[in-house]
Image (tube, rainbow, N blue to C red):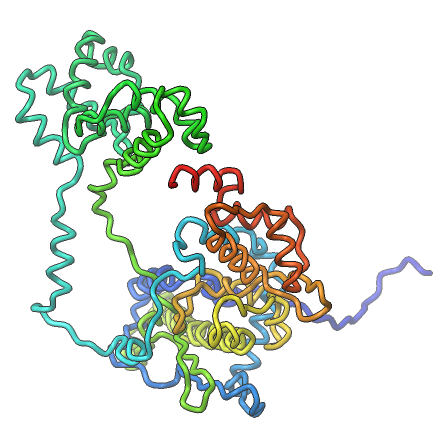
Length: 516
């Protein structure tokens, strides 16, 4: 082989991640709140963009035919949109310049452990058909009752104001007042005082005894239990306010670890009372507030705004449509562009106007692609999980990202980004799109596999229905599930039970004994 310079022609295909394409991929993973903030920033930055004030039409709606028909178009896209989505999907699949999916997917297994009181994973109450029909159709005026409720919430008294007003009336000494104001500012969100009193005395240059006396007076303020330094002291302050603090109750508060384990026999021995008195004392403890400051929490919880609406169709199928209230609508002002294009003279100004026009057009196109992709993924999820919509959570099918990606011919990374922080409103409640993805648990009879979420709900139902005199162990639950055709191990049952916040059989037996 000769080592001489020569010319060689090669033809290769590469994917170039332009800033516009990176923007489109970024929009896929944004929630509706984050998207609204992003669009607002673009409206302020780009003079050629303007907000569309008119009502949206029916372009965001798709009626999904009954699965038995088999003639419904799963995409509903024209050729140009399909090609653009394919190029975007390819860019998402080759996301080396985006840093992968780290931080985009939420930990869904633990997401509903504390918020789900009913165990079905729903964010809110189920929405009726009339709720879908009237969503966004109600006008508003200044006499609307909603303004009155919002005004009342915004005018709520804060905990600091509530305590400061009591301080000004109950404590007259200026030094003690200064100590009180300092301690009020050191309260945490639950109303506990985690500060070291010796350090407070050093900062204020006063005696430690004076800080302790001031704290004792502050602990008599409303709400009862405020300024406590631990849970036992918080409960003791509330019991003293009710005149229910006695030596037996003090012994109980000194052994809260035994109460957490439901060890009634040990509590009877420590407190020196019988089991009936222990049951009354535990009931008294349960009526107390372990976080007294939360009653003054004036942060208004933001409701979840669904991105997709699902409702039954007259032909026994399902209608899947985008929520127009969560879709930002922007337009490119071509008239303004034409006017300023004739007025500019310098090259720099012409380049700036050209860049603004290109950025505005691409943003509008990216928003349309995002909406189309969300609708496409949501429609396939509804098609795959139709038994859940008709029969409930126990009939949730096993589903992974690959199943949806193969059905709609997209990459798993695209489906992962689309389903992150997106919510679907169904007649059974509002769910995150990732809720419908569950790993499969094999069937012991060789039949169809079971979804992990449906098995969790089956375990919860078994525990809720167990009699007080016969608490089932994890092995007993495994035997029942095996008889029902669910092949599951005991450690998996324990993992699901702990994820739902259900105590062990020993703890449940002790708790039921206390209630008796």
